[in-house]
Image 1 (cartoon, one colour):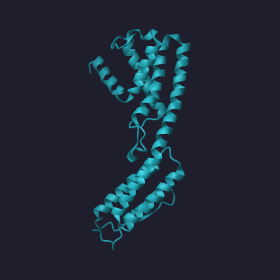
Image 2: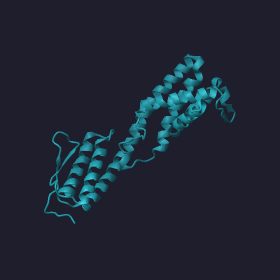
Image 3: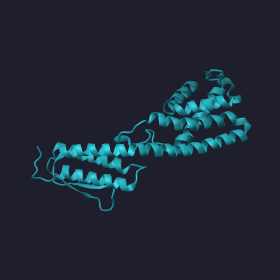
Image 4: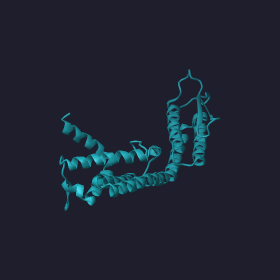
Length: 242
């Protein structure tokens, strides 16, 4: 049990940052009780997630930090770690319920706008420049596929990944450009007959004359974005016999 006659921490709102808590360790020479160390670690991790909520309003983040500050004072200063840990879990649940849907909708909206811009641009290029139809429409299909892929994969969030919308941490534009280039590479493999896919009446050996086939290939590439890049890398190594 902690010796409550000793103070181990000073906890206060950081003066120059309303989204931060200033936790200072005192009595450094003394061994800090393990439960207080664990609580300190949880408070720091929770604070970092709150501060990193990209799509949340500042006033909401300040409210969360204010609640966390009170919890930290109860747990680290008043030395009631069990009570503080329960309060942290309740705070995490509150934040996840409120922010999870907001983050998903905001990210999907941003991703969708960028995908639509690149899709329309690709279709326009494909119509104007006839010789690159398959690449342009494949790219367009990939843009739609990436957007749908996120909606399918990211059904829910938990607190610890609220600030990490995608594991690859790529921006929406970077992700879309990356998958567009991957799709072009896949189409090159198909046109070179290195791989051949048959989908019903569509044979990828005629992809250069089949807009629907190019769109479908691109759409599938976008849907499979998470695993496709690694598989393509392995295929490239096989081709070069590395």
